[in-house]
Length: 113
Length: 116
Image: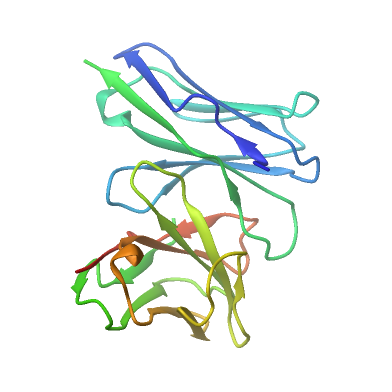
């Protein structure tokens, strides 16, 4: 049973426009969420995170929104740039302990110049 | 952010040999490290959780005798693929959680293993 779902395997966006990547989760014990970016043949890079006590966290061009009641989060990138083309993984974790992150399957974002 | 290194970055070996991959946290201490593998165009699959000074916890379906994990210090975990076969060819990635971190995991650059 997949606890973290990224239902869109791919997304294409024009340069300069907004990219919206979505993520849904099923485990109500999750209360910390992260987004990672991954280029081919490289390890994932941490992008941005959000705790369940917030509904929005912003860092430059990247904003993550969390809707706890819907168990849904999204990553907004604006404006999108060609260098943003990568696979984006959503991850979730319960707050405490050494439990590993649970990853979604990823969404491949292509930003077209 | 914190830096995690992996060595080697790429290895090609013959079937039946063993390969050791090192994962180091360079500027922080990590009581817990994680090992993942990724097949082409698929998600990261957690293999095991490695805790410093104790036995690793393996995910269901991962053979502990096949994938030996040692976490001897707060900055080093090793994954040894024993008697490697072509189906073990994959991209292996480690991550480390900083002891004082909320829950962020920092990933190494990955190791591409090709078994001939």
